[in-house]
Length: 359
Image (cartoon, rainbow, N blue to C red; front, side, top):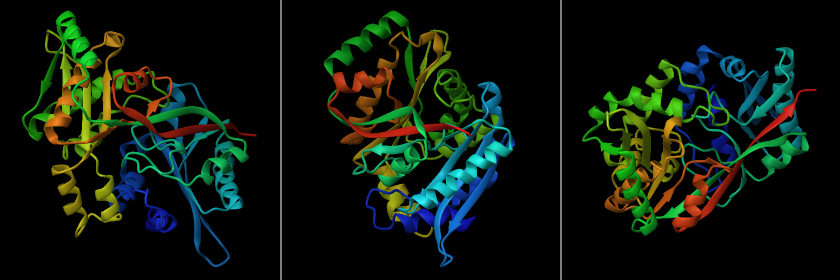
């Protein structure tokens, strides 16, 4: 298992854009993640004639997702391979045949248990350093999977946004929406308050993300898991919720100072120095990652998302950030037009989820 987790560090040791995850977090996900209650996970390592590891892959059958979406799919994830097509072919064929043996008709990925985790393969932006919530891969990865007959299912785009004063148009529209909708923004003073609203926060996320590709509602155990993993390191003025006139939570936003450089310095190890780099990045940083934003379906086209656009913009200036990185957004997401129309922004990365019918 440790060899499986640590192989990418060897593969990417000379790549300045690779962000290694923490070994302990990867091991915990692979062995204790609550999604394992309804997923079957199988791992493989590929070796060459010199008994050196040259690739890895995970196969995942998410029975809950297959049932909810009326699909018969096997996923591949944790996919890393040297620049050798035959190794990639062996790994992906192994997952495909495992899926076939389990009566499934489609292989898709890369993804993990859900889209609350890392998913999609980098197809453009190989000269960019992404967030800790996204995987990096070499340019030959998409070439290999497409050569094997995989086709695009969806693309995600990530934007780099220069932090400036709130755009006048956003300011005006936010004021108009606030007056018309009677929606207000609530923020919290400390992490204890945040943890108290954590469960409700992710119930709103479940409603907001319901129709997004590859998403299935988080179970109560998964919600407890993500609250513990995210709210423990939260920066209070980067977390906010939208409430209606009755105090009901109808929208959410969660951002975090970029930990990419800190994770690179930690190089997979939290101790003895990794935790120091992470804590320093939380306190002082030029970059911020916009992880989660969403509103419940009843307000999907109401424009209330402009309220946290304004609030977050002000918080970014207050905290001294110079650039903000959006989360991965589906290419047809209307929010993409906001970045290109109102902000000083540019597309940074494009990632792709693939699918292939099992023969």
